[in-house]
Image (cartoon, rainbow over all chains, first blue to last red; front, side, top):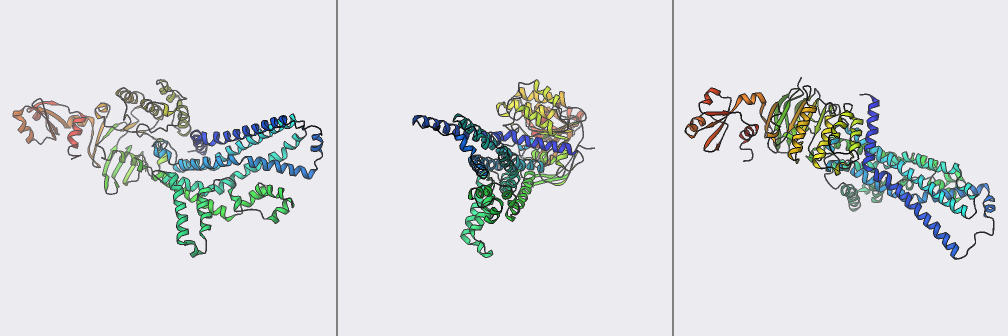
Length: 336
Length: 284
């Protein structure tokens, strides 16, 4: 069979995942973005009414002059402030994304066994490896790309609302600051570049959930959470880790946490970070700039790739995905 | 070359023996009825053929080992496992697109032509369709695939007689030809016996009858015997005896017709009667 047919097949498998989980993958983050925009709009309207009711005058001084008098160094700070605002307001999309990918990974190899439609998929010339890999790619790349797209919709919508508000109040020059393409495109590029890094970090979680999904006969959610948590308590109870001079806190954070929570975008930041010396080299001593650089910069994304934690987790995730493929091949007959 | 060739095919689930050293050959161009009581090993045998279950012994399907070549095999084999197996979230149009996208032997035109004869709309989801319509959709998808071997496991379970008749009529008139092979299991054996060319009875994991329908007609005879000759008939070791209107009906295997004619009127037994005779004692 030709490679063209194979890659075409894989595209169809990805499309199938999208058809089945369109609601979670596409609509959930998009609706979250729209809700955030609606809240923003309400906030601006409320502000407008408050201003009118109390007779507060925003005029009287030329705000455009204020904007124009901002120095070059301050422009960077303003951009950073905008970036922090935009990233911060994207957090709800990240949380929705976590729950979507969590429930997707737990159901991906279980739901069709439960309703026996697995027998229909298995009646087609598709290998178990292709099938499972399509689900891995959906969880790790397609879903994050759609979440980032929703974030961009949110950012653009927010800036449009803010621009409209500024124009109403005669501070049109601020628009140049808001819409400076260099910082917006850089921000969005960082979000896209971080997708593969987040994916590597999330591999142990997605692998664990897919393994449970391919193995259990019922209640994948319960098994996926109870097993690591019970193991955590066991380790704490018998002080198992002291034998290898590790604490149970280490186990909770590096085994239980990594297995269950690594899908949370950018959760690697709590493990790896640029030191304050590194930060000073890049952006000087300004704390705001340091913070933004810490949170989202090409340096911090690249620094994640130097963490052994990330690679060990990714390897464990890959091994669990191989296990999921094996169960997908051999463990459907229990459902007859 | 046999489409399916099994040698000492065995399968155990714990202490239960689902298949016990089964040997069989299925030739191309046949419609084989695989018939057996519940738990006799029908589904296990089909799963082994489809590469969905491990087994012991040798099994070759279209010349391939289903355990190691399942993906390639699925280009040549189609199967319908039973009703309600299509995913409920899937839209009809998506199902046609997807199968067309991944199956090199699928004809979209054929599939759409089959669907046009039903009330199924492309935008409907499977969960919006009735049981009978789901089977129509599944059949439309499967018949549009130019496969060598079609496996049907209780395909019409839970359907009313109109859908059942239509299912087998469509299969015969629009799908089957002498290049293709169909293996079908069903409990409604009397409804499909006229379309079968071969009969396989399976009991407790063993093949207890493997014959063409022509052989069945020649080998087996049902004789309606008056009470006065009943003892003579019993002496010939019938497979089975039942009483109807004060007469005894005996089922014989492989006895001379002229001889049997002396006992009474000879009929061709129905597959259902043959089945009951062969399986007696199964649930005892």
